[in-house]
Amino acid sequence: MKIIAWFFVLFIFSYQVFCQGSSHRPRVVISSDFPPIDVIPGTLNYGAPEKKSDPDDIQSMIRFLVYSNDFEILGLIAASGTLANIANKQNIFDILDVYDKVDDNLRRHDPAYPLPDDLRKITKQGLSGTYATPWKEIIGEGKDSEASDYLIDLLRQPNPAPIWFCFWGGTQELAQALWRIKQQNDEKQLMNIISKIRIFMIAQQDGTGQWLIDNFPDMLILVMQNAYKGFFYYGLGADPKLGDSAWVSKHIRNNHGPLGGIYPESGWDHTKKGVIEGDTPSFLYVLSGAMGLSDPEKHWYGGWGGSFKADSLKKNLWVDSDRGPKAISEWQYSRQNDFEARMDRCVKIPSRSNHNPIAIISKKTTKDIIHIDANPGQQLSLDALGSHDPDGNSISYSWTYYVDASTYSGLLNFTHSKKSKLSFTVPKDAAGSIIHIILEVKDNGRPRLSSFRRVVVRVGQ
Ligand SMILES: [Ca+2]
Ligand SMILES: [Ca+2]
Image (cartoon, rainbow, N blue to C red; front, side, top):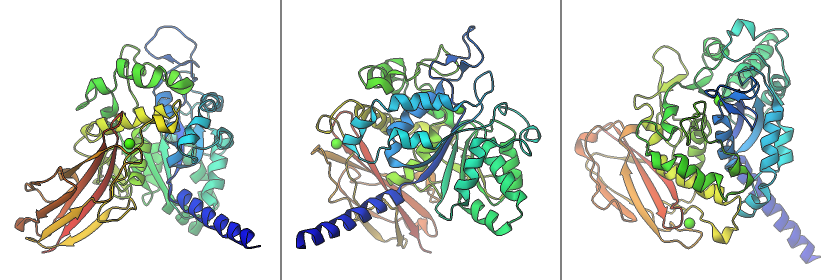
């Protein structure tokens, strides 16, 4: 009897832990102009229109799938793509079949990796013929699709937690869903729905992007128009050696299982071989929050998915920050190493692969950003004591004054920035400003992996 009771308590406890874990994972919908996995790059002068496209979405999807344990994935949408301008969810099913060959091994590293069948169930087909098309031709009666119907049901669920929509192609399916919901004239429900939508568009790939911006001024929309080029192996500020053809062959395509094996060699331009994942910032932006590096609700903070500034005219529209592609490329080392380690998980057992260290500040083990109030001239101490590595690697520390998110414009020199403890004096002329400090804890495994924490200091007058 006692044993049964204890078992029950244990069950409830583990169930709660599980539920807490899953509820903290960010909720995402990925919408992609996803091509066939045997896609032919656009610059090659052969191939049927339904085979010709930009292969970069496949690169991004492979990366997304090896991070799928870090998200609560609510939908995978096949939007219009290829030169034939068709939406075909079979293309996504095809890559899920390849994921199906590696997911068992991924779950040895983390049981949160989703089952392929669970991803198949939420894979929905959008509307064909929408790519680069004006909104008037693709929103309205007769423009519903399996995907837009699915999004209506999803958005009507009472859960108020944010849903991040990562658009790797056009935005028609969400626009149509909102058009349909608006038809019902239930203003309160519409307001509730708008308040939980978070949109990250990689450029505006059909006319509905602008329609969303114009018709829903309260809805959060991030448009990354150009900065995503910082993800290209040859992008501004990038080190080509961390993403060129040789890097991809060694760390992704060869000896990393069937999923890495189909990583396309190039994007649209077949002569530029390497990482061209222009759509990837959309989900790394959300991931940066879960990692402890950033806060996706603070769009200017910066992180693996870049940084934004408020548009001067529209209320809740955010555009590329003035740093452009550098806001993406500056993180190339840590994120490429991280991807490399994730691909190792497809084929290696946990004891033979590297895992990220755990970064702890002031004994706080959550990944929440640490907010501190301080006065000018005050001495501040931050301690990363307790940070460790689950593989037993040794770790090193690096404390950085992150100028780009700070409003203090002076210099801030950290004398012991490589030690676990950081002490510094808040500058006297920093009154009224905000200072961002990033801790990077790096292990000495292969590849070298990092974990981040951020401290935001609000300086009083
Ligand atoms: Ca795309
Ligand atoms: Ca490690």
